[in-house]
Image (cartoon, rainbow, N blue to C red; front, side, top):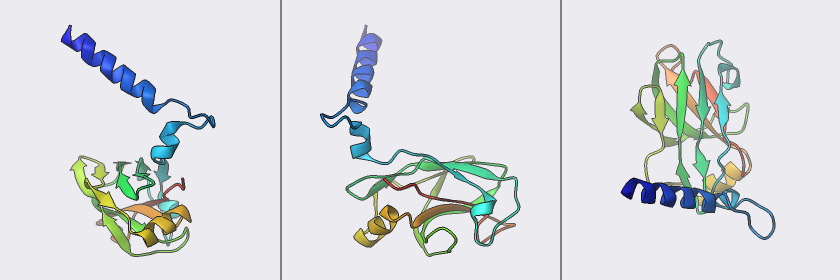
Length: 147
């Protein structure tokens, strides 16, 4: 009986997060950008020839909060970060990610962008990458999707 009530609450909550506004937009789009991005060596600067890949599910919300993670394959990552830089350019680390499971790098709770970093995100000028011993400058990379 309790499990049934919990299931009903979860289903009810899920249906509310995917509801539509009067303008026909998903309310989820108003909360955060939930698009995924694929990390590859070809996107590194300079490009890296590697079999490693990754998928970023990092979200940036309108209040500048950041959540999410990167799931990697075929790489023994030593570090992962969110950097500020346009495609084809390297930039400084702005958010270090934490290894939370094998092949998973996550944004720490309560992480927030500055106003300048949020503007860079909206301009498509933030990227994620994963570093390895073989490629300490970064082995795989992807630009974060814009809202």
